[in-house]
View 1 (spheres, rainbow, N blue to C red):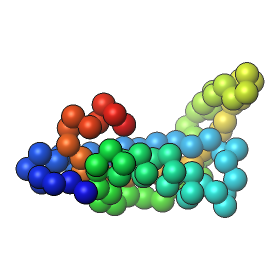
View 2: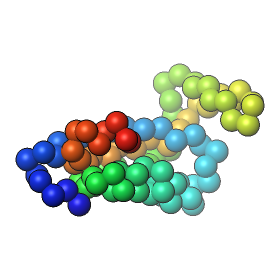
View 3: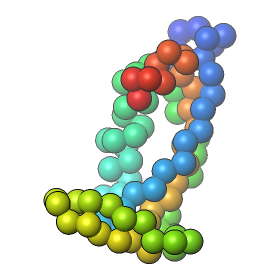
Length: 91
């Protein structure tokens, strides 16, 4: 929790998750990798959008297990949070 609201700033991030993540574990993945990192760093989650599988305007390439994979869709979401500016580097 943030102790001094004057020091906290609001931020918003948008992110893509590769579609090889099973639909039933996407929410847990976001909780573990993103939301938890913010709260551990002292931030407070304000709101956001849940991940939705969307078509991409152009394919993206990601190397996973030494294989170059191309994706035409991904889970997209956004998250708004408040945190002290010096903690952003930690994230």
